[in-house]
Image (tube, rainbow, N blue to C red):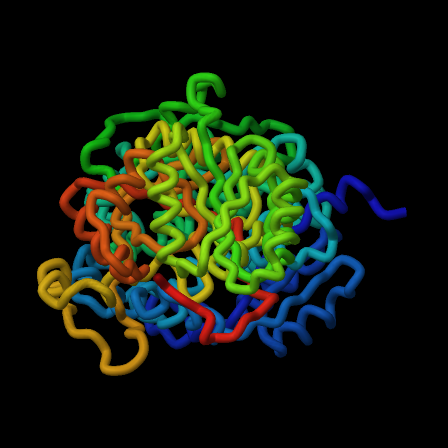
Length: 580
């Protein structure tokens, strides 16, 4: 019979030959050395999910079998196919970075093309393992393939310490060691590290072993991704451990940690685990804070606010429908499956923009069934309809409104993530978004990070502002491509990353688009009514609102989630499409 305790836990790892043996100094280590050490780890009985190429797969399966092994083919090229690979290469070849400290110029980080892309992707590999996990694990932990270089394999094969982890690990957890930094941490400027962390950092999160309950991984993935991209955009780079340290200090309520000795060797953790002499710590000691300079100013100030303090019943749900009652019905069904509050709580209004009048009675029947007000208009267009909604909202007694088009459905599948690694589903999204918007005084809160044609890492406003405005805000990169999109288009500048009850979100220079959104009464007036156009277009709004945001007149937020999916399955003729 399978050991049910052991079956709860899966270890995740990976191994690639990145040419470390070619280094001509103390940093050199042969790939065969790693294979030898990995073979010791492969003797454990615990479930393993392993990433690597075909040659590693043959090596692994010569030692293990599929009953407790899941091998996921992944070549080194995978680490290049992302938006941070080139940023890493640029920084590691920059003299300003390598000259920070004497050891850095000869390090694996500086000398090896693939070292940092690999170590900085461990969180993403762990998240992928969560998605593809065939063992239906309750706990997932990353473990370095060469860990037995410093940890005796007997801890895993004889003492079976891995099986004890559920007794002590209740949150996503790191191992930490005390480190008195002066100028940098693994190449990451120490002063800037403290600014990101909001505290003076003296505990470093180790990269050789980390993990926790399976359902905590998606949240980590989103926070880590945002931090990685933001720091690289600011030409700051260490290793994954530098980022783990920031996360620990910035989100003490999210993570636990276990202290090891100041030499950083993780064997102490496994010795303590063997002897049941282990206590997770949940609060980082705050030595000094720098909130005014902290670009990731995590705010938990309203975590104890009651529902009656925050939630309003004056919320509207506006939906634009066009020539397809089935699209509307599918949207409603997705809302009921995701969070029924989207249907049960707000005042619901359907703007029926249909040119096919045979759909009118079917729309009326659906609206009657689900409690929508059915407002029939001639085809006002997508943006014309959005403008009408702003005008209708202004005349109502509503304080907030959700806006949806009828082909943007919720994605009610727990545990899945979008292409950018952000969670697709969280519980209680309706209430939580309203609480966030009210507390932050957002004019506009966008619900999706990933969209159909792109995502919110690229500043799409750059394409749509007048040339003079482009030169004003992007003076070093103000020329548009002659055709198509620019792969080096400016990125969105975010100010703060925050979380509320498991919902991460950001503030900053977020661009407007007609994707699902939550808008306040005052925000709608500033966005759509104080300045109007006879024939509004999405690009015009995007440009205008960005300029107003830069003046400090608008306050925008964005969820680090992707709860909805664009799916126009009931197609219509292109010549029927109308903007305004």
